[in-house]
Image (cartoon, rainbow, N blue to C red; front, side):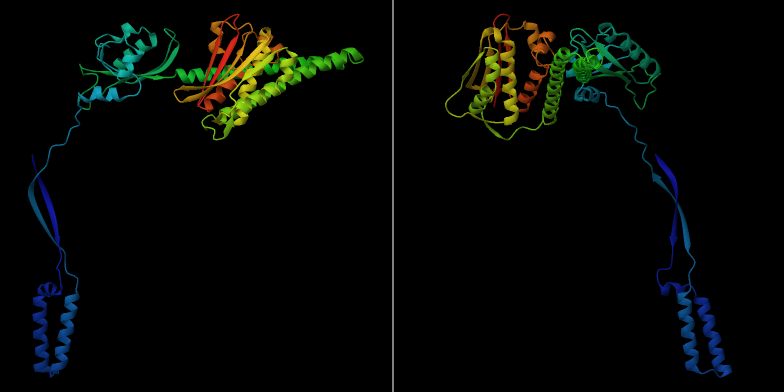
Amino acid sequence: MDDLRTTHLTRRPANALVRLGGQVPLLLGSAGLIIAFVVLGGLRIDLALIGYLVLVGFVAMLPQPVVTVTRTMEVPVPAPVQPVVEQDMLPAFVEALGDPGLVLDGRGAVLHRNGAAARQYPSLQLGRVMTLVMRNPDLVAAIESSQRTGEPRSFELHETVPSETWDRVVVAPIRRPDRDWFADEDRQLLVTFQSLTELKRVDALRTDFIANASHEMRTPLASLVGFIDTLLGPAARDAAAREKFLGIMRTQAERMSRLIDDLLSLSRIEMHQHVRPTGTVDLTALLREVREGLQTQAKAAQIEVILTVPKAPVTVTGDRGQLYEVFENLIENAIKYGADGKTVEVDLIGIDRSGLKHMVSVTDYGPGVEPEHVPRMTERFYRIDAEASRKKKGTGLGLAIVKHIIQRHRGQMSIRSKPGEGLRVEILLP
């Protein structure tokens, strides 16, 4: 396609000679006038020559008019480039999404699904109508609304089968630049799922943690306030009651102190969870030290702590204070809850299991726990028997602290138990 275009060219004299050439009539007239003054008026020739040269120089410096030349010519103009949507690129785009994604046709049938969608929703086969497979009212409403209005829709999808999950679902029309959405018979929708399950679970854990911590603090505080009111009132002059109540108040205050210490310990561990320890620890010496520190408690419970360790030092990379806390918690729990077995065994052996080289096991022969409780024992404030735990001065945070410390040390923790056969905790360290 050709187009007529007008071009304006501006020209100026390039130098003084060109400028003088444009003033020839003026220069000739001036020369004739000077000659007349010399012949008739007696003007000296040298003065006349000087005056003429001055005139020539002046004329050479005069500004010259700008010459504009207008020219019209035909210039080929290329047709505007129209954006092209490559239909073959759409599946590749959907496949590149990290989240599950599906392309639906105008009927809501699946035209394409990426690998993530195939894994998470295997029932959404190609050609199947999505709303007939997933009969969620919000999903049906979002697809129908997006098809009708041509606008994206989003909602939160909560499913409980086969497991509880949350997803942010976005239904968006795939618009082509060269087509009208409402007139397009081949309209398509893109449906994407962004998982919110982990965020929801973390939020639930945070909420439960605050509720549990508040509950654990409220109970001893309520006891303290009640005893204080009693001592200020009816028992103000009762020495025996005062001594009894003060002893209970001290126990409740110690319980709150232990809870605060465990919460601070857990907070410090989580703060440095991503930083791997760099210190050096001799596990043999550490376990001996922990056993010695718990001898008084073991004798009071009539428990014998049997320690089996190599004679030579066993050195690992770790934080000595945190590893001491790990084994102190485990052995103390075994003494508290396994007293019926009269024996607690602590063993340190070498292993070779995916980079893990050392295993410390703590075994008691107490009543054990039911299998359904074992996976939850490392949750914060989880207790199998809350009343028994409080009587034994437990805070419900010990195993949670152990789990986080072992994770920071890039190790593994496992718990094995059967009712009537005691409980065994294994700590594997690199």
